Length: 445
Image (spheres, rainbow, N blue to C red):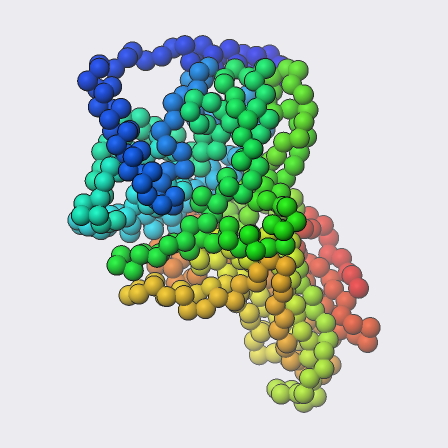
């Protein structure tokens, strides 16, 4: 049945491509062409982070459209992976972004900076209902718009869709470029396997003081300085795990090396309803950090007698800072034991002042390959110490300000362990960790 379905889908795609709409009147076609040309000229004059990732794209011959659903009719496994990814949910499923987007539109003239924000969440020009052709008096917050003659609302809803990376100039880009069995033009693109394909959005850093507007995505720069980059590892090495399989369901295709399209990162679901789909990926991707606790010697300060421990948080698995991405991402680590009024709490991340002037107030994130060590005092006789770690997308005040409860997930617990202190050191019992979410608790020396 699967083979029959695959063949039917291929024929359906081919026949749909032949069922073209009636040609537009010449005047309309000329106006559409002019709008695309003028907007393309404007975007290409701007810094890369103010441009769509892909300018206007024509539908490749042999396909009815450039939607992910159409791609998924043959590339079924890849499509199913993409469907639960953060990329697929970066538009209407991203309640935080939609709230920020409302602010970016402003409420009056010279307040609209939305055109800059949408380019990474709907990165193909065909997804934009309006195109920018200029700026009034050169002001970033006063764009001159024209209607997009090729706007595709369904494609917009797909957010960071297949065409973002794989459609250019009427061709489907792939790492292999094998045309022999494809129902559409194919072109090999080696950049799909490099960081170039990712940093257009994940390295966007700019501040516009006159607008009280800033963008602080520095993952690309962090990666460049990391041991991973020096070892030849790219973003895809971790976020798109290798797998051997046919690239499509067409009968007779070879099994070969390709990559998963989950694009796993923090694996905090965008909405509570997505938790069940996301949870299995945590065992595949694991955690970027490890925790080590050991006893140490220091003079007693709070308790007499006392015992001191040091907690080391190692960022030894990620190719960037921990955390990275959105500027409000942060970790909260609690160290607790009987006898404490409240647990020790560490917060790892950056802090910004957003108004009336944008300022970075602090940044204690852990660079790739580095660690952070803190020391903590407990009453003598303490035998067990608990360590819990949570990761968050945003701070509580911003979450509350946008009324995101029930519509968005702010963070999640990703590590929990108990350390038993003894003469031979600290023995760990792992209760929860991203690398072992389905396994029972286990003890380790």
